[in-house]
Image (cartoon, rainbow, N blue to C red; front, side, top):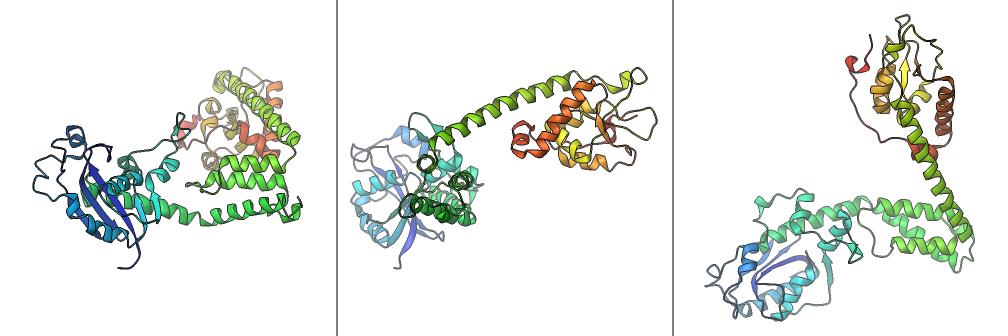
Length: 397
């Protein structure tokens, strides 16, 4: 038999193989989906297992005429010893029960799909200081597995096929991110050389400078769905401390915090002005329409920031509604583009004319700063909302 990867799952009477619990079912398949072994077993000591039965549905009557595990363990060993990789969901649990019943498990690669999926699902466990383990049923649902194809959950054969499905989905993600993994590995090697034989010479760094090298590592690491075993966030933090002057690091963190605080104040200020902006139609003929016209670039940026924008239309004496308050600042850039091509709006976007002069100039300053500094813009922009725009929504007369 040629070397191969196999998927193993078991059903048991409980959780403790060395304290009276026994095997009820063992299933093994290969990664092509071929069933290599699938058998129920009659426990030799336990006569009932009500709690486990409620989960796996295996009753004493179902296994009354089945063989003892001792009668089949040599067949199981023959399959295991010809495998170079053993895959499972909570693999050590299944291997522990098999070993307790005489299985000889060679020193081969063990893949625990449960641990890999926990990192992808990303639910943090404060007590364990790690990612919370998720049930196989949740992992299968996450990747759209159809249980009807190979049996129900909590049947070891059905669980083998579900585990294989999740395993393949995760590996497809890793395959698609191969270039990111490779570059991250290169960046790590650069850092090690920079701190050692490279004598802290930046010419050895892929990114050109220590600051850019660390930022690139953080960027790549955050993108990876499955985090590598050979690098952690703490490792990257350690490289940062070793490669960058700590005074500079602390200053950058302080500046980032100040920017964040400033951004929150600006966003609140914009919201306050927007909330107080009255319906433009209420003031038609009651105040001077001394609008500040905006370029399309400025108007789009205003939309992103939540700053109300109005329009001057072909209809003399009329503005384009109170949409600045009720619609425009909720639109995405794509919605703005469709509206800016409307032939009835030939005079272009303006600040909502119920702004006073000070507010107009203040908002224009914020917009221009955001256009010049993308990092500043990112801090204060509202999340995009794809809201469809119809004639009635624009509120035009």
